[in-house]
Amino acid sequence: MTRRSSLPIVALVVAVSVFGSSAAWLQQLRERMFPAPVQREDVLYITSGEALRRLTVGYNALTADLYWIRAIQHFGAIRLRLAEHARGIETGEPVPTGFPLLHPLLDLTTTLDPHFNIAYRFGSVFLAEPFPGGAGRPDLAIALLEKGLRVRPDRWEYMQDIGFVHYWWREDYQSAARWFERASQVTGAPWWLRSLAAVTLAEGGDRRSSRLMWQALYESAEIEWLKRDAERRLAQLRVLDDMDALQALVDELANTRGTPPAGWGEAIRAGLLRGTPVDPAGLPYLIDGAGRVHPSPDSPLLPLPVEPKRIGPLAS
Amino acid sequence: MRAIGWIAVNVFRESVRDKVPYNLVLFAVVLMGASYLIGQLTAGQDIKIIKDLGLAATSVFGLFIAIFIGIQLVSKEVERRSIYSLLAKPIHRYQLVLGKYAGLVLTLAANLAVMAVALYAVLAYVAWTLGPVVARAWETPALDPAMLKAVWLTFAELAVVTAIALFFSTFSTPLLSAALTFALVVAGRFSVDLRNFDQAVDAPAAVALARFLYWVLPNLAPFDVRSQVVHGLPVSMSYLAVTSLYGVLYVCALLAVAVFIFSRRDFK
Image (cartoon, rainbow over the protein chains, first blue to last red):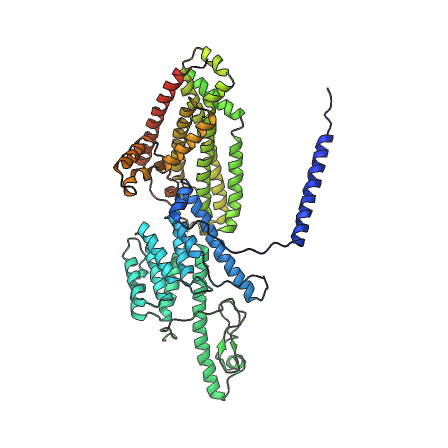
């Protein structure tokens, strides 16, 4: 019996290593000498959902998943670029001015998989919100949700979301109340939708109804991201409440001593506050030279929402 | 019946020898890799996407096996000239065709069973890592037994596809058989368009032809309940029964024609 020599294997390993590492080194060298232009421009080659349905030969749900992932990536990538720009990081790319592919991607996703619940709900939130938080297209958000309702007329969550878009981004409280009312009539809808409809109709634009709205969204959110977003909005409303209360306190002190206080020490010593007031993120509120109360510029809750016209301090 | 059984067992053994089970390893690797990547890429849709991917992969892998082995079932014997020694044995030609078909269906059943177990295992692992709080948001439980309905109808669809491939392989070359089988699978998945042809075209003759093709070509779209199952929509047992029975009848018709052609084929 002859022993097989291991030489050919060793030679093969050596050859592959040498050629492979040389090719990698050469590629690195080429990239240094001729840097490839940064290309992060999103392109959508197929825009027709019906065409895609045919091209995927029956594997529609899986293709819908891929488009859903693309929608998330598109949204996240633009948010990231905006954050980089805000922090002054030079990327050599133009600053994004919108989310041009968000609606087409969500539309394709929901055409391929008409039961893709979260695509409708995610879409409504991020299509409606003004740029840079979202695409600033409440009309498209409503259209997407109505598309979902045509497939699942029993989904009270979509009706609630349409009401939400009307309320928050169109300031159309009548329509919002109508949608909440419609949602409350669906079998299995939660009881609080009826009171939400009533409060919206009576006090639309009030911070209390806004809080109710975000609380409702928080309760019905199916994914962690939406839940966290609603939680953040609720915290922002608390900041607005805190600022109103603290501003009243500072104004009172300013009236008493003639000039606004420079910090919270005086109010604490007077027993008006137990300690330095902090926002829900744990950062202290500040008083500027003109006696106006602000959240800390480092607060993760900034920027605070621009409140609809009718929103004002809570009537106590 | 015994002869059919022996031929079927031999086809199954041959497919194992031909390393068909390798696709199961690939399936498992795809699923495990995907489950990790999906966790990084999606917003809370991990379980849905793993189910979609797993069920679609089950169908695609099965389709490849059904087509590429199905078209060789007869042609390989002719090519290797082993058909002469086979026909010299005390078996009828119809037994050979039916045995070959049963063997490949057995291979597909074993593959699908292993893939279903792998899918459930990956889902169980992902569900365990995500925890019960996240699970409350899912449309259906991670280990939803209803997924077996989709797997069953995938199996029924593959049984039809295998019969189509075998039918073509009794009189055509492997390459042409593969092309024709694939074309029929695509047409079968869009057969609803043939039924609604009158909405797109005004010519009565064309509409009549489309309607004829709708009834003659295999209607494979009803075998796809993957999306319904993943979204927790009801798929009744009567639907499963009617669709499966349609598959059985279509397979019987195809095998009858295949047996007829094969019985008259001259191998000299």
